[in-house]
Amino acid sequence: MLTEVRPASCMPDACFCEAIRNHGIMQPANTWSSLAFVIVAGVVLLRWTRNRHIAHHATYPVLLALTLLVIGFGSAFFHATLSFNGQFVDVLGMYFIGTFALLYGIARFRGLTNRVLVAAFLAANALLAAILYWAPLLRRVIFGILIAAALAVEISIARRTTKRDAASRLKTAIVLLTIGFAIWMLDYTRIVCSPDSWIQGHAIWHVLGALSAWCLYLYYEDQASMMDSSPSA
Image (cartoon, rainbow, N blue to C red; front, side, top):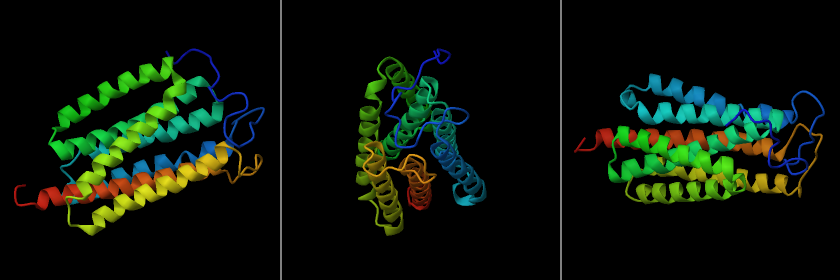
């Protein structure tokens, strides 16, 4: 399915502000900035292995880190090639983080087991991958729905806790994502655009998205700590 030679849906003139190079990496600023997600994935794994309090919580940090790796390398692949294959992996990584956030929230809200969480994650993304391949124009709508649903679940969970630090980390993640999306829109619509500059709005979106994912992990970490320290744990 991923071997077919096919240009990205944004080609030839809707692939964000950055100018498309004629050879080599087609959008270098957008490509290299994608690796911010890879860096955060490494930090998540390192922090998890060193935090004894949550050392036995393997599913969510490992799955989140793998998701961030797919996002980072997939986005870099997309912007480096502007191919449909790159677009497919890039958007699939976005689906990964959306479904992970939604399902992990539901798991904590409804008490789903890790096995059910992983099974639902794989099944949901298999379905979304099929939709992405056959109807790629729906990709942004689907991603928006996933993020909105995940935030709704997390806000419901946050209202149940009295620990302000945990809630503040979730708020920080939301603020960073919101600012990043606003910059994404300015770049995508070319309202603020300098095609040949190394400072690109879409690249800033990548960095803010990675920082938002880091804050989300810290929020999850606090949630896990509270679950372990609760009287029923």
